[in-house]
Amino acid sequence: MTTLVLNPGSSTLKFGVYDLTIAELGSPGVIEDCTGSMGEATAEVIRRVDAKSIHAAGCRVVHGGPGLVEPAIVDDAVLETIRALSDLAPIHNPLSAQVIDQVRKSLPSVPVVAVFDTSFHRTLSPVASAYALPAELGIRRYGFHGISYSYVSKRLRALGRDGRAVVCHLGSGASVCAIRDGKSVDTSMGLTPMEGLVMGTRAGDLDPGIILLLMRRGMSEADIDELINHRSGLLALSALSGDVRDLELAAARGNERAELALAVFAYRVAKYAGAYAVALGGLDTLVFTAGIGEHSSSMRSRISGYLGFLGVELDPGLNGGALKGERLISSGPVQVWVIPTNEELEIATATAAALRHRRARL
Image (cartoon, rainbow, N blue to C red; front, side, top):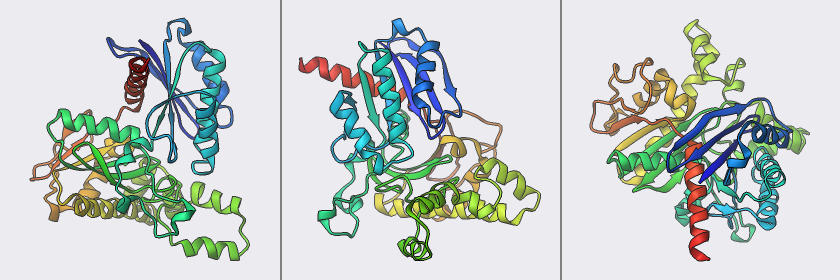
């Protein structure tokens, strides 16, 4: 079965064509700068691939809410639910809906499977998922980056590290997840992707009183949304950039605000990693993945430096920036791994599984 995989971000559309019985067909690609025109970008992808050979399509969707907890074959009701959940993921869900809608129009005979970032975290206990709010509000923690965590957890199982793991998904969006035996125990993002770590342009954890204060000062909902999603995080701390690569270069030249941003980022990641060692009752494996986690040896060193008391000891040679791919980078009792994530392959795998499950029920 040949599957078209579509992974929309806030302004990019990654894609690939997979046949899991053979290998990936064609190189993965990305269309940049497609904010607001994700449907057009999807149509362009379909023009680029051999559409006649496509048997299924899988699309990443950030938020599945309380009802969509497994990959779902899209019908009108599922698509409407994805749209309705846009208030919980306003940057991402509308774009995924555009992608899915365009595939259904362009390839009407091809089944489309929505694969949700929240699905991996369906195993969170009530203790980990609850907010201390009245239950009738229906507000709880969901967690995100689940497609990446699902892929990494499978790689850990293949490596014989299927025990107590803390996985750090560090990119422009960033989170940490506690995983035990392949299942999510706790994670830093909550109801929306704004909770948790300092990110490229997102503030992460905030005192809710800050929002109330800004409202009393006259800021509108739209102004606050723009502030905490697009003008905060590393960008705000550094007054320079939300990209760790830029900040590392600037810090090396003596830019104090860039250094502060990097230090705050590392400190917050390490705090969550330490907390999740508590949640797991110990730590066997620490994993770095996604753009920063995979490519910044300096940031891995900063974070790991806080965690020596847990048995985390990096090997400087193995952690070196010239090395690439999946690799062990530690010398201490806690194994530290770099595992490049592959969300597109995970989406293809989940799509195939969902369609097999449907056939088995027929």
